[in-house]
Structure formats: structure tokens, C-alpha cells
Image (cartoon, rainbow, N blue to C red):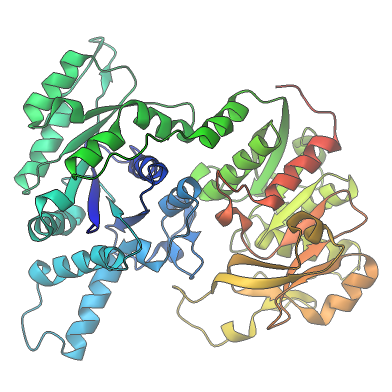
Length: 539
């Protein structure tokens, strides 16, 4: 069977949830026995989101092979439990960079390089690159932005050409749109959807399926009206109601028969109906918890939940494993002082200090960590969170006055966190950090060893600075142990305080590998420790 291609576009407004719909459809097809992957085409000119402020674009997700990608790839992995790669996220910046590099090499033999065919050809190459691997029955490609945006035009044109070149039976388009509810009129309005489809049609594409985001149920008459005016089959109008959780959406799409409509349209075998039994079990535990805890998420981008999306979802997964609701309380690290930290954090059963870059909010993170260490509150530090726990320990236990990271203070007398050797000559900011999966050897008998159950692990990284091994002996003599190291470089990956009920900092990003099927053990055990630390509030 030749690879089938599904393109997912969006209309009327942004942030409708194309990534969740794509992941939900992929989950249903996967449950039917098909191998599926999802990629995201982003219309911005950044080569990748690695240099974007989290306030601009939410978190930057990292793959095993070191790609800095859109956060939607996190949804893809959390739903499918299959790793993504560099090929799964493509931006306009990367497309243009590739085309310009080819032009400079003379690959176009003196031709005038234009949007059509050169840019559109490169877009199509990025799609077929996944299909040509032979690994996937279906490639789902989510196109970022909204139909009608100037930035999206080359992508829409590439889809039009792609369907012509690969054949109608092998390519389909799903258009996600909004059916707004006007309270004054007391009714749902289909006109924005009609206009969105007409815009798509004017660019040469007739969508095959409409997924309609709505707050209220669509009547059969409304579905027929949408189908009639948008030139599609009645059963290809799919209702997507607002959900209690993103993990409801695969079951909602199953009820709407989205996967069946897609398989029939692509002339694919209707294999066994997906049962999603473990998914239903996950949702049952999510919605019927036995207990409730509060965990403080200490960060500098807490105003925007998407800035820590993978951490938020990993805590959901861990909560479900413990049959517990984890109420994540976002605490802005800039608000914390020695005087108010007790008041801010008094009701927290656990503290997680989040990753980040730059000096802003650093001191608040250090103050929160001291509170956790001195009051035996379960602590979990990730990336900069691990580095902050090292700085806190250096200042307040080792009495190294003004100890700091060279990132924050290049002239610190005690650089307990220093820049990595291979980073010292790097000047370009984009794509130059230590990125992707690296091996870590875990010390037998440590907390990390008990959690992972093995002595060798692989986790994803995104950083430039590391623990300064010149200070390692002093730290270990005082009670903070390096229990995980990279075997090739000696880079400290994990720091613990064995005498503390639960105190662990990791240089890597475990949140990137937590999925519905495999919640990350560090998060699971952090939540378990938080449940046992103080009296649990019943849900």
C-alpha cells in the first residue's frame, strides 16, 4: 500500500486545536493497526522556535535527535507514544534557507528561483521525506496559521500541487473551523465557516472533511447546511465540542466516526474498531481521583501556561498514575522574597522549579528551593531548576558567598555552574545548545536508581551551562550527591540530597518523554512523594 497523506488546515481563527485533532485522528488510526506520523509546517520565518521567547510561542519542544520544535510535537508524542524527529517540524525559515543554500551552490543551474516552483517543491519534499521512509502508512501534516494568511499561501499551493501529483485517492484535506455562538441571537453561526471554505476553494483546494469547533451541539439540519454550502458529504461534517480535557478528544472523534470517514475517503481497509481501553482507563482515573494535592510550579513565564506545556501534561500523567488530581499552582519566581516565601508556598505539597534562561527571576527560584530543602517539602528541579538547587546549596550550606552561574554573573567568585567547554567558541544562538538525547549513568542505590530501576538512562537536553566539577568533592562531602553522570564527558546530570524526603534536580528535560501510555517515572515518584509529605486534601 502506498503512503496516504492527510493535510490539516485551520480557518476563521487560530488556536482551534489543529494539533489535538491531528493527534486524535492519528491515535484512532494507530489503534486500527496503521503506522502513523504527524508533522507540523509552521509559516514563521524563524528557522526553528529555539530562539523564540516562550511568551511568543509557548514552550520549545525537543526531540531525541536534537530538533527544537513547535510544542504541538509534544502532543503528537504524548498521544502516539512514538518519538518524532527533525523531519516532523518544518518552518518557512528552514524552507527558504534550504532553497537559498541550493541556489548558492548552483543547484538550480542559473534558473530564476521563485516561490513557485522552488519554494513549493521544497515544501512537498519535506512531506514526502517522511512518506518515502517506508515506515508509515499515513503521514498527517498540520499546517500552522489560518487559511487566508499571507504566510500560509505557499503551503496551501503546495498542498494543491501535492494532491494533483499523488492522486485524489492518496491525499485528503481536513479543514478545522469555528462555529461561533452569538448569545444575543441565541444561535450558532455557520457563515464564518462558509467563508473560510470559500477562501480555501479560491486557492484551489476543496476540503474533504470539516471539523467544526463549537460550544454547543450541531443539529443535523446545521450539518446538512454546512455540507451543502461547503460542497462536502453530510457525514464529513464532524462536530468537535469543547472538551473537559484534551484527552477526551480521541474518544469524541471516535464517536463522530472521523477515522471511518477518513479511511473510506482514502480507500483504506476498515480494520478492527479501536477500543482505546487503556485510554478510557486513563480518563476514568483522571475524572474520578481518590485524592488531591497542590504542587507549586516556580517559573518566570507562568503567565502563559503553554510556556511549560510538557511539564503541565507530565504532571497530569503522573497524577493519573497515582489516582490523584495535581492542582498546579503557578508561582512567579520574581514575586518570591525571603520575607514572603513561607506565605506563598505554605499550602504546597511539592515544589517544581522550572527551566528557563537569563537572570530574571533567578533569586526567587533559589529562595523557593531553600524553603523546600529546609522544610522537607518534596523538590524537583529541571534544567535551570537543577542549577538553581546547586547555587542555593553552595550559598547556604557550603557558605560560598555570591556563588552563581556564569550565565547570570560572569564574574562570580564561585562559578558552581559554568559554561560547557564546547559552548565557549559558539557565537550563533540558534540550534547551538546541547540538544537531544544523551546517555546518563545512574548511581546504584540512589533515589534516581530506585525511580528508574536501571543504571543507564537516556534523556533529552537543552542547555549551554553545566555543573562545575571543580566543586563536586565539596558538594558531596556536605551531603549533596551527584548520582547521574554522562559517561563520555563526566557532565553531572542528576543531583540529590539523600537525607531529604525527596530532593532531586536533573540537568535534562524528563517532561519531553512523558506520555499517556508511559508517564515519566520522575514525575510519578515526585507526585507520590508529595502525596505522602503532608495530609492529602480529598478531591
